Image (cartoon, rainbow, N blue to C red):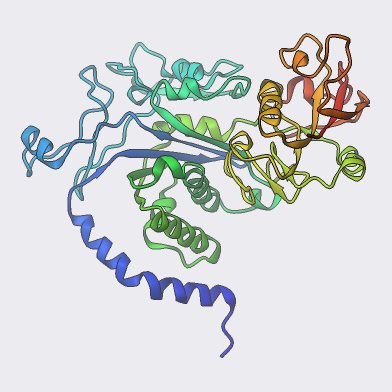
Length: 414
C-alpha cells in the first residue's frame, strides 16, 4: 500500500500524541487559569492579532479565599468596579473581556455615552478617525471604519494599554483564495509564532470570532489544509510548553484584531528587482535581507518585523550582522540604528537610503569636508523614477512612481 507523505505525517502525529492529548483532555473538567489572552482576526486581504497582558493571575489558594469553589465566576469586565482581568474558565462559565472598552486599560461604566472606537483609534495611531454611529437598537454601536495604522511610531501605544505582541500582515495571492476558516486559523498560528518569547511556559486563551476556529484547534479537521495548521500549532505549543484553549467571541468583542486585519503595512515598499540585481552583481552576492517579508524579500534568507512564512527571525536589528553580506533597505526611522549597528559589529552591507542631508543619520555617514566616511567604500546615486516597488500598504512618499528626492546605495565594508 502506497502511503502519501501527508498521510504518513498524520499517522506519526496521532501515534505520538493520541495518549497525551487524551490525558490533557481530562483536565478540561477542572477549573483552569489563563495568564494571557490572544486575539486574532483575518480579512480577505490581511490578518492581525495581539496579546492581552492586563491579566492578573491568582494562585488557587488566593482565589478560594475570594470565591467559593462552587460559586466561581469571572469578574464583570467593563464595569466601573473593574479589577484586572482574571480569566476563570470552566465548563459552565466563560466570559471574554470586552475588547475596546475595559481591556484597553480604561474603565468605562458602559458603552452608553462613550465612544470606545475613538479610544481604539488613538491606540492604533490611526491616520483616519474611526467613526461610530448610534444604531436603532438600544445602546449598541454600529461601526463605520476606515483605519490605517501609523507605522512611523512603535508599539508603545499598545503596550501602555497592556496590549503586546502586535502582529499584522498581508495574504499572498494563493492565501487570499483560501477559505475564511483557513485564514482565521492561520492567523492564530502566525500570532503564536510571532510571540513565542512572550507565550512560552504559559496558559493562554485564544479568542476568534470564527466558530470553526475553535473546533479546528480543539479537534482538528477532516480538511487537509486545516488539519496541517492544527498539527503545526499543537507541535509549537508542545515544544514551547504552551497550553491554549480556543474560544469563540462575537465580532463586536474583537474590534482591535478586526481593525488590525484591515491595516496595511506602510513600510512594505521595496527596491525595484532590476536595481537589486545590478547592485547584487556589482557588490554581492548578498546573503540576508534584513528588512523584508515573504512577499518582497530580495534574498532567500530574510528577517521580518512580524512572523511571516520563510522568515529567518523577527526583527533584523536583533540579529548578528557580522559574517554576512547584508542587504539593508530600512524604514527611515531605523536608518540611524542600522548605521550604529553596522559600526558596532563591523558588518558588511549594502545600505539603500534617501539622500536627506538634514536627517539625523546623515552626520554619521559624512565627514566635515563632505566626503563619505572610510567605511563607505563605494556609492551609487539612484534615479528618482521607477526605483521603488509599492507594497500593499499606504507607502506615503515611497509609494510614488516619481520620488521627490534621491536614493543612494552605499557599499559598506570593514
